[in-house]
Image: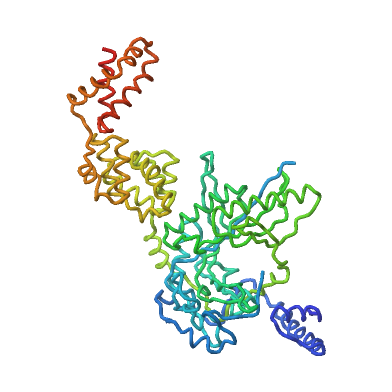
Length: 95
Length: 482
């Protein structure tokens, strides 16, 4: 399966990655070659194989419902570019 | 043309855990902004989510409560999109293997019939933070206290056919999750939020029309109004020869206005994949058995029991079993009053009226279930009449006594049942109204029943409501019909 340049640009936009125009062709070729590898793998018969959600042969450990984190706002906001009234400030978003 | 409305709902229910789904930060409502958002909730580098056991248990309880299959192996996935209230850049949710499979919720319609609404599935996920759009020098403020709060998202099949059915379903769901104790049910705090998918089609047509989705409705009233408005809009568009665009819409409950949100075609490409930070959650039989054993009585079973054991009619049983606190209050009052029908009447009448007027919940009622039960006892043993009972109730409501007996004693409201005293009073009333007595005696038999009401009224007035109305009636009749 191949991928074209416009799809690469779309996926890049969804991932908020900036790919310069002269890098688009090379990226397209690289991703296409990965997809070709996937095509080869598709040939394997997986009829009786359970889909794998995680390669580790283990199950999720659960945590007791007990508060373990106290208020660290000051520390956590010290690296934020803009803060006011305890809120993180971000470029305005309007729906 | 006749149109049929088709509705499917997605409901976000905030689980009543003490901590977030993937972190040990508190979920308490109303905290200062960002004081309950830890590194995991903020999506800082190097974090590792750990699943809250109680969130798993609560989701399973919901599944058991709607007769659904529980998927013993369920998987968390990443739903990728960018928005400032989602700092990780993805929401951790479930898609292919949700914890709760297909089930059903049965609703009672206005005509008393029952309809089963199929649940497609319910999955666990994390809530996002909140964006505050007030002007912070042209910027938006972000509060991440809510980020990571555990949610179950419940998805129905498109089985709902009107806004009334949608509201009946929503109320039933509210009753189920509060009975299970998995959600506090506080709609005004966003504990339950509804997304409504609406389409219309010509009556009789099999194929579904194009649907729109109205998001984030947080009251039954707004949901009903939003559906009404959207159905009308779609019919108008179609009857004018137009086409419905699949889109997400917003409804403003305060202004009653609805509008289209930006088209989400592109944003809908969420590129889900299994979350590499989380292993599959495996639910073993012992957990399932333990949760099954701890299940409370569900609203449908409670309603059936109220009908069977207390002889209530369907309507009364539905209302009294609908909400855990109301059901509890009702049963506690019956335990004292020993009269289910009278308890039902008082809980749904006087009590609920007073609660509504003061906008307080039944569990905070100043008249406790025991007080009400005691009051009903005094009506039954003829200590007070129904009318005086209302006065006693009001006094209890206003904190003027600790029990019905206390109020009756203090205010001297005990009913007069002494035949001699009642006779004397009646004689006085008759003497003072000689003309009416003559009229009564001149009237034909079938008119007298109504006319006697005049004398009963006068007697009750003379006794300040304390005379036993049954006795007054009986003695009056004897004297008048002589």
